[in-house]
Image 1 (cartoon, rainbow, N blue to C red):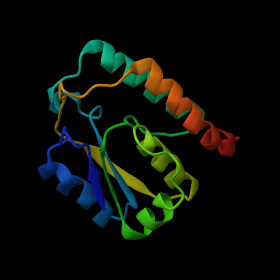
Image 2: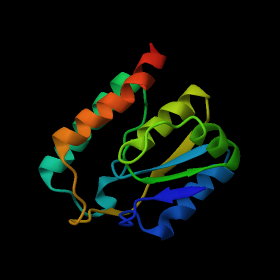
Image 3: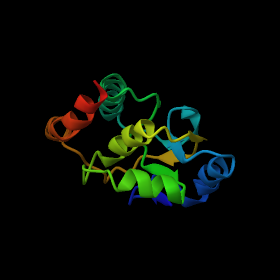
Length: 147
């Protein structure tokens, strides 16, 4: 199973890289904008990059995630991993994918993936403060499970 952002920031032809990771034994394959930043054909504005990197750091600390790009909306799952992880998912809307990674870690799903082409879509908008605070409230149960 593959999901991607609706704006196709990661071109669909990059899906082969994620499927290859699954074929090599990963349960979850994660695309990344930051493993090879020169593949970003259109960078985000610097303030949005800063916000995203800070949010990623917070996720890594609070949820114990060891991924350099938790918010890249380009991920693939084996059938078994998808059935295990998605049935436990509680967060809907923006921010659901870090929860999926947290749950995958919790059930010890193997992961793989790698760098891929990516382009920022200027039509993509988020309210930094409102989005972060809403996500923190949704994320709290996951963080409590960790400790």
